[in-house]
Length: 465
Image (cartoon, rainbow, N blue to C red; front, side, top):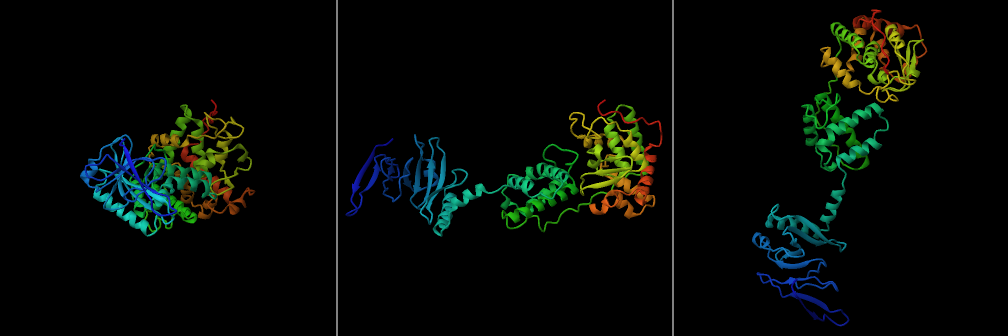
């Protein structure tokens, strides 16, 4: 370290003397070098204040002068003689980093890192420093704004907060699909971005990417992409950013005004020939050692028009075979009663009571309902030559058979549970009424198409076999 020379000068009666330190180690430019002083905080000849942790010098900063600055045992700063507050810090490893130094209106001393030499030229750094110093002179605090920026919420943080505090009215099944869309579509594309940076263009690019089927992460039967998935993902993002607006995290919702893909929810249903083909395959699987739970669930879905989880998560306590009813404690629309036709009642009556709670228990975790139905359906539909049929389309097929048979739309809607819970519950204690008759007629026609009229079809085997 260079030897430090000092001298004292009095500045007036009653005032402490000012100490100025000048090093004998002069730069080639002729400017002075100031070394560290621990005992006191002296002033430099250029009016700066010693930093207390490294050596400081001044020079006219140019590309050549910056590149010629040698690394030393301790880092040091060279301040520009042209623009006060602009400097470059040199580390012992030779890394040169541009700085801007200013004081806030409250008197706080700030140093803001601009960029390393090479990423930004000397002149670019000087202009950037000039803008920062001008902002500070007008009462701003660029470094404080930068710190606030680092602490700002990301899209991933917002999604987690939304799932924790903004979904009180959503059902568990809806939340599960929301989580899949966040993990598979939103976070991989936008998760690390600041919420205030997201623009309508970002949302549009996400929509196009998902619409083209570009899945980022492990795909599942629910994350195949497509325009429908893209429309629903953008709809979810709209709700998330509305939540952010309500919490004051953003001023505008970037989803608002975006022209979305039409969410053309398919009304795919099976023709009589397709029902027959699927029925033959299910019978073959039942006889050839296929999973009896999967076969039974798919048949009950077809015979009742119920939603997937209403049957896959069915409890014995909800089954009323004597009255031909399923009294569900909860569903997508709340408590619900599903009327069973004769074929559906007979099928459930033949299911073994292998578990005290679940009609279709999981094989690995017997305390839970069956959990791998989606992948099982993918295999079954492909073997049946129905690769485009979703498991939810079995519900549409039940309705289509009813409509084709002349059943009224009001009756079909009631059987499917499309009305309010209170309206549906009015029929819970009815027995011989038009709804029951309609359920019998429709399920009988579906049973005939599946080939279930034959008494030679063996009963479903035990799930524990």
